[in-house]
Length: 302
Image (cartoon, rainbow, N blue to C red):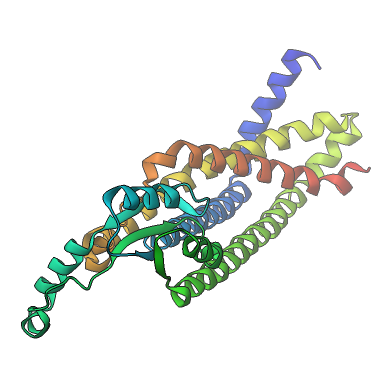
């Protein structure tokens, strides 16, 4: 195809958006809403995953060791625990019996008046260990129990099972919601494209009767669909940014619990702003153009 013919077809595709503005506007609205809903759902799913990961990282195993160990033996236990494949990087913190005794005195002064005259420190030395995978917490506990000098290991099994169940449930629900939104969006976009092409079937038939090839007929519609899709993607990107930042402002400014939990590592929209724009515009262009081209099949057979 000559360059002049191609530029002519591109101009035809762009100008036909205005000539068929009612159907173009309908396609634009459908695409914009679909991309907005899917985009917000994906961002919400990513943030939920971050929240669960944050909570999991706070889930700690208590490894109690003998109280008469030397500093060298304590350091060896810490090093052994840190080498474990089940432990997060930097996930071992030593809590000495002296610190535990001081904290107990400060936090429970009533009990201290009763037991404070003891001539020895009953508190154990403790290594606080963060496990990197909650599903492997039982294996981690068994490994920690085998370390020389360890007398007891305490792990929050019930809490771990609860978090694993919550993560699995939310993953299934989130995936189902996103998949349902994508399927519904595809069906609606396809039907809208069929309606747009059907309203212009006479135009397509005339072009075929005068000898136009299928490619010559399709290219303007393809360009038109891509143009509408890119515009819809850009607008949905702006709306996604406004909606997402508004919700994040409400959560970060008005929820004391949210601040107390220090969920500061949630996704900032500026971190993904260009990825969202590229994804929206690309998805909008592909879906719109593909929907129109797929809807033209029977109208090209004249």
